[in-house]
Amino acid sequence: MNEVAYDERRLRQWLAGTARGFSRRDFLALSAVAGAAAVLPGAAPAAAAAGPIVKPLPPELFTVFGTNAEMRWSAMRDQGFHVPIDRFFVRNHTSTPAIDAAAWRLEVFGAGLRGGPVTFSLDDLKRFPAETHSVAVECAGNGRSYYTSQQGQTVSGTAWKLGAAGVARWRGVRLGHVLRRAGLAPHAVDVQPAGLDPNYVTGGVDLGPVRRPLPIGKALDDVLLAYEMNGEPLPPDHGHPVRLVVPHWIGIASIKWVGRIEVSAEPLFSPWNTQFYRLFGPDFPAEGQPFDRQVVKSAFELDPGATFAAGVRTTLTGRSWSANGPIRQVEVSTDGGAHWRRARPVGPAGGAWQRWETDWRPAAGAHELLARATDVCGVRQPDVARYNTLGYLFDAVVRVPVTAA
Ligand SMILES: Nc1nc2c(c(=O)[nH]1)N[C@H]1C(S)=C(S)[C@@H](COP(=O)(O)O)O[C@H]1N2
Ligand SMILES: [Mo]
Image 1 (cartoon, rainbow, N blue to C red):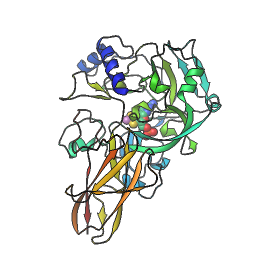
Image 2: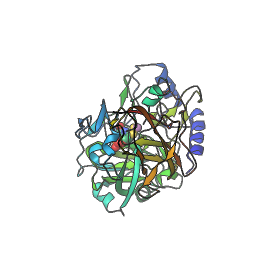
Image 3: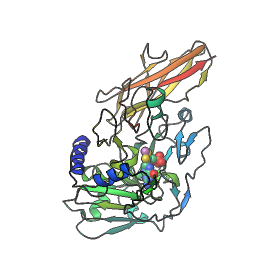
Image 4: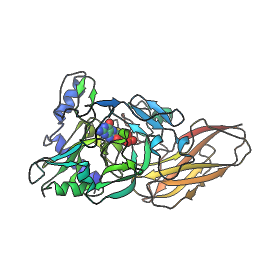
């Protein structure tokens, strides 16, 4: 799967007007007429809202931003490889719907099938061979606040620190098995899952259900329709009863509460790969640069402003991850980037993220901690992330202020 080639091809098709779903004209109309009452076709929400987020959000585990909640990294310090459900971040465009798993159905439809729509119940999905994978889900905007606090740039969107990411064990069925059972045709082009959460309305415009297309190549590769998270039925906030899990791609690809999946015979577009989740700004084309994959990042398992006992040896811990594959090396600086040392890997290499640690005996005073990862492709976190107005893909080394007293 070559996402760059796919993105370039789709951008050309979209500019040429050969795309369906959310055209360049829709996009220009929306950009021009703020507050316009344009309504795009979409399924009516099938479920009542249960609340923005259902699970408890205690302040020692989360920072809450409206309908979204970020994990505090200090909450991972004494945890194992996976992020427990009680602290896994939640990104909701609207609110967590209440869906009865017994009544839930998945409808697969579209011109990319040999026949008409095919419907699956949860029990139907559970009769396919199940697979379990440890996969990171990370919002494309994770780290966004650092464009402002570290690079002095203005961006719009939720001001995440680094906690809009998590690794869980997802169990489910390969999307490819389900698509083939539904009668996938050889001319299928794109696959678009849509959520059953309430339609996303912004600036007075109803953009329809949250949805984003995938090329058929990715859909048949490693995408899961997950019904379990860390050994439990998928919790309400994370997509109950079934969500997509799209490895290596930005979080928006992993559509929660999936209710319908369109398989098209032509390129598909939605606001979530045209208006949002494109790179806009001085370094990018006027129509924005599409992207799908995540980048490389590192986080200490502590909160900015943490305090340490001066003169006492402590162990700094953290995690690094990359959509390119395993992390090859992590370097840590405790003096604002003047000196670097290698962190010790914790646990085996090659998982969805790499845990690491290093010892430190802080002198009294203020310090700045930095962690910088290099992945298997030799990609190392840069000092400065590429500015884009929506603040996506912040991959630069984050400077974490702490004190010792
Ligand atoms: N239906 C639906 N799916 C969705 C979203 C949403 O609001 N509605 N948010 C997306 C975004 S932007 C992200 S980052 C991930 C977050 O997954 P999580 O809430 O399980 O952490 O879900 C994605 N899937
Ligand atoms: Mo996201």
